[in-house]
Image (cartoon, rainbow, N blue to C red; front, side, top):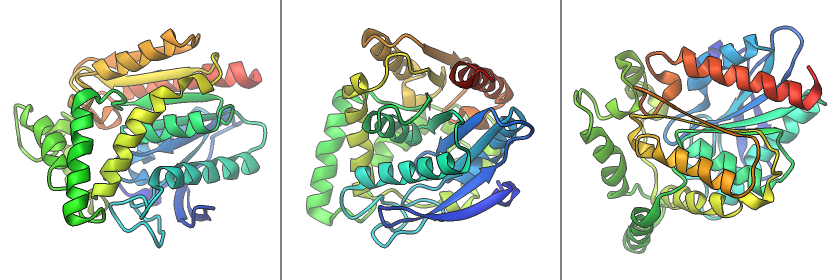
Length: 315
């Protein structure tokens, strides 16, 4: 999608050393709140323009930035396909918080919702637990924060790859153990990205997007698994009344057909969180917001976000 459709595209200097490219869609009418979007692995924030339009129409200031190693964000230690030479998780969280400071200064007093899709959900949760009280609500979509034994095996494989080839080269094993396996379960197998959505036009747009055509490095995969295991261990840091919305599809191979989102909801509730909602949409694959019928989950999210705004500031 053409990210020039965003009303503003700008850069922000992060304390991490990154020059962050971010996009902003202003609220239509009286602003109710702020939505910060964290995109997923091997994509970029420009793909959320349609979702941003929906939320702007609902009165939200929408901000979406490219993570390190993705899109148009630049950093000396983050070529395409990696967060950083070292301390990647710390630095990507620092970038999110730099955006948090920016939106707070631009729109003081408005509640801030942190949204993340897939890898972005891992980033969102890890940012939230590292900064308790920094956000007024949290929404995680299509993320697997319960990789289990297979995740531990993947970490071993990545350590071996790093030892043999270094950390700044693409992993030869992880794409086969994830994307290719997930795609092999699709009946059509028209492209290597059919697992993302039933919508052929959306899949073709992804495949044809030059900002989505790169391979994640060994170190980036290591950072992804670090976040997967770290986030759920630190839930107790968050306020127990934090509004939380967890979303997936029942055909999302990356979340075990939504079961890992249900697991995450159970972890929150078991930890005493009192405002947790989870939704598993039938007939939807990994990219819920690029699926046929995406308008339904988008509208449901907008309704939830409006409730958050009312809860936070009485608007």
